[in-house]
Amino acid sequence: MREIRGRYGQHKILKAEPGISMHLLPADVLTPLTFSDFLMEYKFIIIKPLFGPQEVRIIASDDGIELIDGEQIFHFQNKDQAYEYITEHICKGKNYVIQALLTGPSTLSYFYFTLHRESAEANWKVVKSTTSAETSVPDRVKGLVKLWKLKILLLFAAKKLGAAFPKCHTVVMKVAKCPEGKYWLTDTILHDRNSKWSQYHSLHRKRALRPFLPATDLCTKKTLFAFLNTYSKVVIKPCVGQQGQGIVKISSTGDAAFEVHEMQGKLIKTDYDELFEYILEQYLSQKDYIVQQLISLAKINGCPFDIRVITQIVEDNGWIVTGVIVKVAAKGYFISNRAGNLLTLEKALSSAEIGISVENAAKWIEIITQKASSRLNQNIGELSIIGFDIGIDDKGEIWVIEGNYVPSLSMFYMFDNNEIHERISYYIKKYKKSD
Image: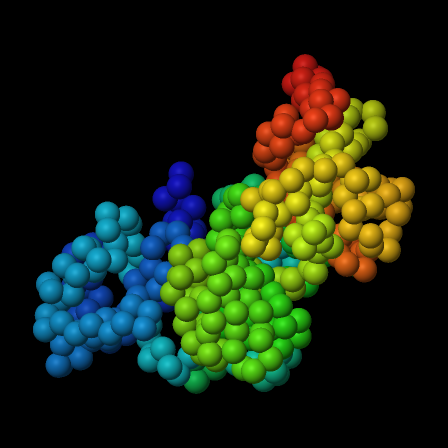
């Protein structure tokens, strides 16, 4: 089943539809035979894993084979040498897909479209379009008719993938436009319920929740630059991750340089090209990421804090808040996944001295998390417990950072107030009995 969800499985689903297949590039599973066949027929080739954003470009010529892996360029005299290097240093035992480009990569303009549906029965909608390099799609596409036809193609492709993967409600599609004006659907990436990109769109579709969501986009060279120009401090997060791993804070220092902060470590990049080269190599080549405005979280003794809120479903009353605890980040950390202290909301807000009372904070946290829980359950279904990370900034504004569908409850076990742990456990048992 995992292989079917991968790139080649999705390619086969789309290729079965004539209206879509004419916009697909030649592709196959990478083997010695397909590698040889593609080199004989095509000059430009891309190799991609079944899952993940990595791309290796290959250019074949009479002088040999050039392989471009990130910033590294390798030259081989023949296909056997090239394939041996690919299997040993790139594939490393994992399955890859080989795809042909019908023109040189430098002549193509790439666009990313995000399509989302509110439930398995709902229609797909194009909710975001982003370029990987230059400008927005409407500025690049000449004529509303061409844009309309492209969107019809993408919606049709999303419908076919959605039928094959009913639990997937967000799909990112990468489109290439060649100089002649033809469009190629070069990649489709499924974002399941655990993806932060999928969750963002699920919550963003509810108008009442939008003011509480940080500005968010897929992380590309273009969007990262735009976010840094707008907010000066941003975070990038893997679309699928846990316990804060891979979350990076990037700050503009004001002198065209940038500070990169992960965990307790910090380093400086002297310009944007150097910064993006580092981010691409260390993070974006490994996983799909989002970029998000950095919320200036309120602090206690110089350490930022956020709030873990547990919501659980109750048959008669819908979603209720059953647990609230404040996590104060350890010294030197900008996120609270490495908590230095656990506090009640009342004690945290009295220590932070920000412009919101405990009563108002508790009321708004309850309203927001209940609305968010209902929205996520409508989109995903079969949820009984959600752990939200809620931020309060230094102005007293409340933000939904993210929700976790299998939240760790260990912090509630360690907390002095055992009543919270008992209440959460009670509703877990009650829900299981009702099943």
